[in-house]
Image (cartoon, rainbow, N blue to C red):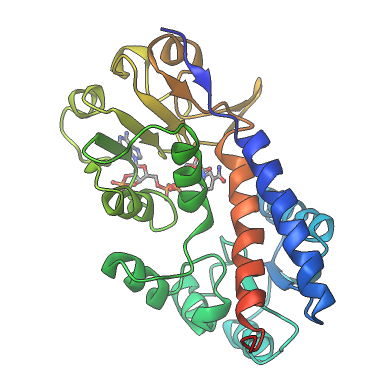
Length: 285
Ligand code: NDP
């Protein structure tokens, strides 16, 4: 079997076009979706991500508020900025780019964002709502992964899903979302014994490890859907957590790196911000 490409770039472009259209309608009603992105320090990867997010906002017709703070920013200063953004009615979404410098506790900062403006879905209230199966602002990368999976048209219900990675931003939430779709979910991590045996059972495999080509071709079940979340920067360029060529020979669908999950993350961020702006409208009579 040779896998079909699960094309995140194409799907993200479709979602962005839809966001742009809905933004234009919203603007006619006097509301411009506004996203505030806060970047503290000089982390090079963070700068790239923030640049991509700003570009996405401008293309969609949003107002983009970029706050660049120095590496030496104190937690108190950052919390004061978040407080201002929380009460700013032109700001519908607030995103604090991680990682933060060492003097700042990310959990304290994320919890300070008003849950309704938490377009990254990292606030404990939104995480709790996700666990409880209640409507929530969902984290962008896992939400994007679910959209990609659904775009295959295959049913997820009852399927064996294996997630490698248990981070709060990818592994854990995507496992919950797969469970909500009635997949049978296994979460693997660095302490998992005989990881390959778990992975070989997967009809749906999500790799979010952060190790280049960690999943080898022989671990992939024939016909599996493989979603590679990993972004590993090597001299040869960006590579994922899955050894693409041999995995693609066995999978039915596979995401490329780049051009798979990455573009979906930004599309979901824009969609979350737009939805928050739409909710700010008074109900039509
Ligand atoms: P983390 O480093 O937070 O988590 C990595 C997870 O992998 C941990 O749960 C860890 O287990 C597990 N792990 C590490 N080594 C092994 C091993 N040898 N065997 C099994 N499990 C292992 O990473 P993130 O979740 O933040 O990100 C994962 C990858 O996804 C990274 O490459 C990142 O760049 C990428 N990413 C891509 C995004 C996108 O938009 N495409 C967005 C976010 C992330 P343990 O918990 O036991 O330590």
